[in-house]
Image (cartoon, rainbow, N blue to C red; front, side):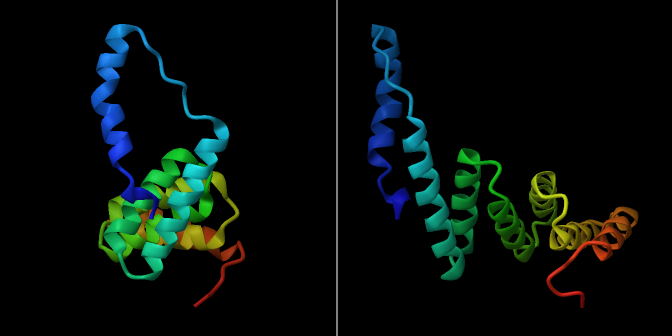
Length: 141
């Protein structure tokens, strides 16, 4: 997995203050490198999710989303994992992010409503579940 190579980043973190003090600058990560990092994190997050490594998957989804906050599938998967861990407030935030990107995502409205129900936000839950009715959802049941 991409996360196993933390040593170079650790060394960079330790050396950065010294480099800054001496006036040496480091090149910032290129867009192609950022995309490759995102893709590796996304791939590893999915692998961890499907193999049942939930905590690791959550961590990797968060890192991947920091690189690409427009990744709607990442927000959905993160929210589902968090909800399965009974972390409904964090799941709620993930589903809100998903719906900022894809307001037409019927399943997202259902998931948001269910997380609100678990948080005791019943009025909001009903509104969002009703909103989902007017949008195509994968499983109406």
